[in-house]
Structure formats: C-alpha cells, structure tokens
Amino acid sequence: MGRSIASAAGRLRQIASAGEMREIPILKGCQPDQLPVMVEIVRCFSFKLNVGNYESRDFFCSQKASCSINEAEKVSAELHKFCQEQVQKAVAVYQKVLTHRKEAAEKSQRKAG
Image 1 (spheres, rainbow, N blue to C red):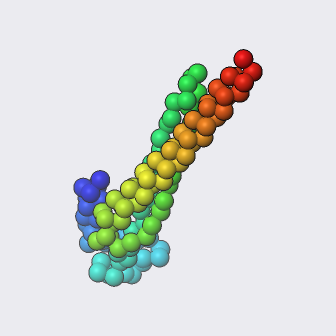
Image 2 (image 1 turned 90 degrees about the vertical axis):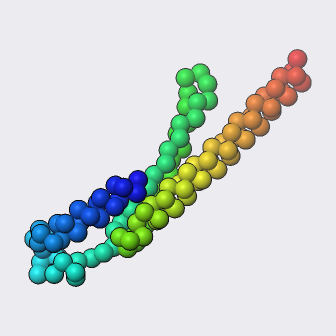
Image 3 (image 1 turned 135 degrees about the vertical axis):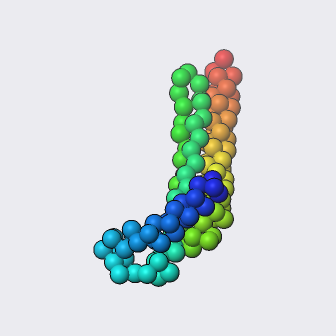
C-alpha cells in the first residue's frame, strides 16, 4: 500500500519535472514546483457473509478524502481502517438480527408443538 502511493508520488514528480503535466490545460504554463500537491484517495472494504442454503449477504463501505501527497499513506491507512470497522459493525448487527429471528422461530415452534 505505502509503496504504491510512494511510487505514484515519485512518478508524479518525474512527470512534472519532464514537463508532461504542463500539457494538461489547467496546468499549462505551471513550473514543476507550482504543480498541485494534493491527491484524492479512495479506499473500500467489502465482506461476503454466507447465511446458508447457497445464500450470502454483501457488506461494503467506500470512503474518499483529499490530502497532501505527503500525508497520502497515513490517510489511506485511516480510510481503510474506517471502512473495515464500518463493515464489521454492519455484519455484527446483521448477525444479531439473524440470531433473534432464529430464536423467535424456535420459540414459536415450541409453542405450536
């Protein structure tokens, strides 16, 4: 994770110093030291829960943030952690619902039987 961000930042600097980024209309005429140093990071996390009988439930979280290129690795890790925690919370709530449904079904069967 950190290496890919670092290599992307290095590649961005390399492109900037070669003057290639100045071909983008909004950056035309910028010197390498004037190029934007902000990046946008998107992190996602998904989890598939098997609920039996060939059925599954999918849980997904995605978050986006803008930060300086120097903070990219830290922000990326924080976003990933946030997404993972949100998915885990949602899975836990869903599992509680399933447990309550199962207990209610068993209770009604005992009463009927």
